[in-house]
Amino acid sequence: MWIEVTQLFLNGLLLGSILALGAVGATMIFGVLRFAHFAHGDLMTMGAYFALLVVVGLNLPVMVALPIAMLMTAALAVGIDQVVYRRIRRVQPVILLISSFATALILRAVVQMIWGSSNQVYATGIQLPWRLGPLTIKPDHVLIFCTATLLVIAVHLFLSRTRMGKAMRAMSDNMNLALITGIPADRVIMWTWAIGGALAAAAGVFLGMDTRLHPVMGWTLLLPVFAATIVGGIGRPYGAIFGGLLIGCAMELSTLIIPGAYKPAVAFAIMILTLIFRPQGIIKGAL
Amino acid sequence: MCTIELNGISKSFGGLQAVRDVSFTVEKGGITGLIGPNGAGKTTVFNMIAGTFAPDTGSIRLDGEDITGLPTHRLFHKGLVRTFQIPHEFSRMSVRENLMLVPAKQSGERLLENWLRWWRVIKEDREILKKADEVLDFLEIGHVRNELAGNLSGGQKKLLDLGRTMMTDARAVLLDEPGAGVNRTLLGKLTQAIQRLNKEHGYTFCVIEHDMDLIARLCDPVIVMANGEILASGDINSVRDNPDVREAYLGSSAA
Image 1 (cartoon, one colour):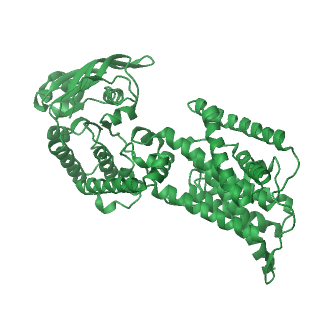
Image 2: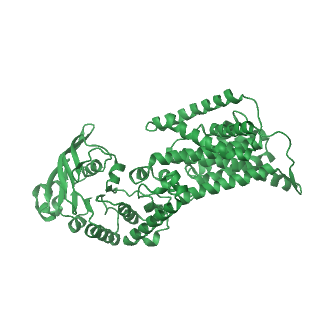
C-alpha cells in the first residue's frame, strides 16, 4: 500500500511540475491582462510540436530542442498577442476570452494540418527504468522534474530580482497605479506573453516526453492548469506552482480510490471546492 | 518647479455640469489650496489636470506647455504627479519595492541591456535602492521598508503615496485630501513632509483638503469652489471672511 502511494506521489510530482509550468504562465497572463487565456493549452501543444520539428528535422535530442521550442513558442505567443489580443484589449474581457477560445481552435487546426492528428513520439524504443527498491523511476522523469524545478527557480529570480519581473507583479497587483507610475505597460505585456509562452512550451515538451504528442494534448490539460491557478489564487505565480503540484498529486493519488479515467474530475472538484471555500486561493501573503 | 495654468475648463457628465469655466493658476513654488463643499468639482478639476480625462472645453498649461488631454503616464514623466483621496499601493510588494518601481526608463527594462551591460543595470538598481531608502527615512517610515505595503496603516499609505512622488523628479504635485483618515500625529508628520518638500526641494503643490486647520497651516493662496465654479480666492483669512464662501461652504458654524 505505502509503496503504491509513494509511487503515485512521485508520478503526481511529475504531473504537478508540468501543470505548474502551464499554470504559472496562465496566472501571469491573467494577472497582467485580466482574462483567462483559453489558448494556453494549445500553446503547450504548439511547443511540443515545435520541439518535434527540431528533433525530427535536425535529428537532435529532445532536451536540446527544448530551449529552441521555448523560444519559438514565446515568439508565437507575443505574435498572437500583437495580432489578435492587442487590438481588443480595451473592450470587455469577455470578448478577449472568446477570442482566446477561437485562437485555441485555430492553433489546434494548424497542428492537425501540419503534423496530422495521430499520436507521435520524440523517441521510440523503451527506456529502462531505474529501480529503487520497490519503486520504479524513469530517467526521463527525473530529467523533467529537475528541468521544471530549474525553470521555476528562474521564474522566481526573474519576478523577485529584475525590474521587469517587479513591474509585472506591480501590474497584476494594482493596474491603475501601475499605469500612472513609471511602468512601461506595453513592454511588460510583451514579456508576460514571452515568458508564459516559453513555460507553456516546456510543459508541452515534458508532457510529450512523458506520454505522446497529440493535437489535443494541451487542451485536455487546460482544465487542471486552470484549477491549479485558482487553487493558488489567481494572478499569483507562486500560488500557481503550489497549486500545480497539489492538483498533480491529488489526480494521481485519486486513482487509488476511483478509476483513472476520472482524474480530470478530481482537478475540477478541487477547483470547485476552492471557489466555494477560499475563492482568493489557499495561499496567503505576498506570494 | 512649475506653474499650472487652467484656462476656462469645463466638464459635464451626462446632464450634470461638474466644472464650469474654471480658470486659475497654481503658482510656481507655492502650496495652493483647493477647497469647497462636496460635489464642488474639486476632484474633477484634479482629474482633468492629471489627465484622467480631458476637459470638454478650455486648456491646461504646465510651464507654458499645453498639456490638455495628455494621458496620466505622459504627465507623470513631465513631472506632474498626483495622489488619490484613497491611497493606492502595490499591496503584495514591499514598501521599498513600491518606491523602487517608480523611476521610469530603467535600463533593466531592455532585453539586451540585461545581458550585455548587466553591471550597469545592477549599479542603477543600487542607486534607486539608495534613493528609496532616503525617501523612506525622510518620511520616517524606514522601519517598515520590508513590510508588505498592503499591511501599512491608512496614514502610512498616504506617506507612501507622497514618497512615490518623491521618487520622480516631480515638479508639481497634486494632493487629493492628504489629511483624510490620518491621525493627528501622522498628520503633523505629513504636513512637515509637504512643507519640507516645498521649501527644500522646491515642489509646487496643489492640495484638496477638507481639514481647515491643515489648509490654514499649509496653503496660500486658497481657491474656493462651489457648484463647479470658483467662488473666491486669496489667503485663508480673506477667504474665511468672504460672505459668499461662508454661505456656500463654511456654513453658520464657522461664522
